[in-house]
Length: 350
Image (cartoon, rainbow, N blue to C red):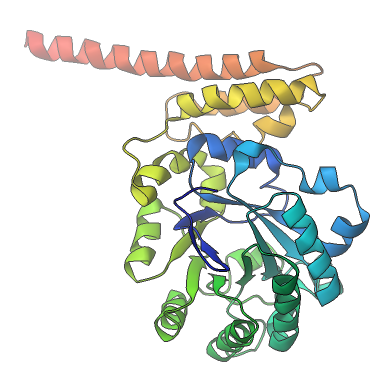
């Protein structure tokens, strides 16, 4: 576990983490993100308790050792099942177990977990207590500020206070409501208004708790501004996924590293992982889909995305696709530099 992670007793929080995102933060995504940041806390996609208990654990829980520190996010609402899954997570070597109390999808509504749990703070507390008693890992909560017509201040504080009595010390708060009726999961990520001030108020009212903030944070500058308000940690989700090169600055800006990690350096570091996965039959596209935005803002970024998207799905596609994509960016950069030099020569000639 990184020494840049704050861990006191059962408390664990990172100043910076990449939020759990369904269908996105799989093991290949996390391994790639780790080439950009050594210290950010990474989360799995949400995995349901019944899937962990009855499903293919290697497929659901497997990860590479390079991914540490890594947290497993669970979806469920039955204390006994959650305790069993927390113990499995501990046996698998995860650094933290997190309970999802924020996902608004139809799947979690039919299973009465995720954001539905905002309505049942005592049930959440019972679930958390069962997990805390089962493992020595930090056990944390990720929640919304409320659902549907709940008053956000009442619902958020009720959930936190119930869980605090059960022994929970760390919370990640997505600073907007979830509307379980009337909005799609995608709309729930954007439509309900953000209320960062409420999360700040929670931290001021509960200074002994560790509070991370999530939701609508699009830049590292915004992330640092939240920390300046006294928040303990910041989670980036879609911004970190769509523009992963941002993560190359995280260790310097948030953890005191001296240098950044550039996209070419990260891709070079990811190459052995890709080779290993290809060797065991993982299709190239399963990895390249997480890398499409790493050249964002650079000349040749569009060609990079096109090559990685189209060529990676060809039968037998291998690392030569990555080489072509990188070459396209380097050629575009060289062309820009050539034009700059020509301009400077003309300017100097007067």
